[in-house]
Length: 260
Image (cartoon, rainbow, N blue to C red):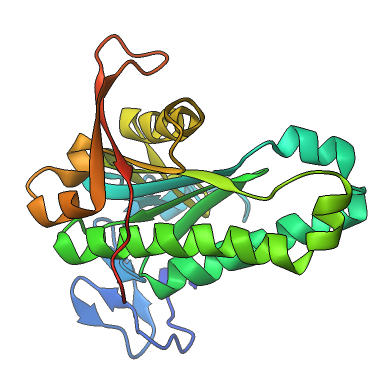
């Protein structure tokens, strides 16, 4: 918590489990903030900037102070998964049933991503974007295992409501894309951390390509670059033109998955 008091702004740690840090030192008592102080918590850093003197401050709603989240450019592994034929499902399945099905899928996504060390960036209707902020061989292997578990989750979701899906002659499956690229990562608005950049858009476009290439899980050449072990699980599908891009993208189909 940051609180304005008569003599300035003070920072309080309210008992966080992992602790918070001010200029590299763990905060164990309230600390007064000055311009340029750097706070660190939950893997993020924010810089405190006081833009005007106290005498220039207006009422309590106009502090003249901002806490700016640092936006950094960093390579990340991105996973995008989208439920196939969701529009058709929406037309055939009663709304209450559909909400339960998608809600169960959301819960499965969050559990799987947490298990494999990823962060869920956002859900967009029937689509999820997740990411890893480390891109080594261990994280790439974890991404392949997460993709495997996502496919299994769709199969489990189908089996749990088999009678309903059979009644409307429908399936429950998803397409999934894995890509590695450098993105802008940080606080884009108050309280929201997200990814921005062309690699994010490309990952979404790659997922749409799964319908055309006839494979449910695809990766980019960038995901496999400098990681020859990963190619043992994949088949090269050549270079494909992606909508909105002038240059082709190397696409690989994931045919087998690593075991735990």
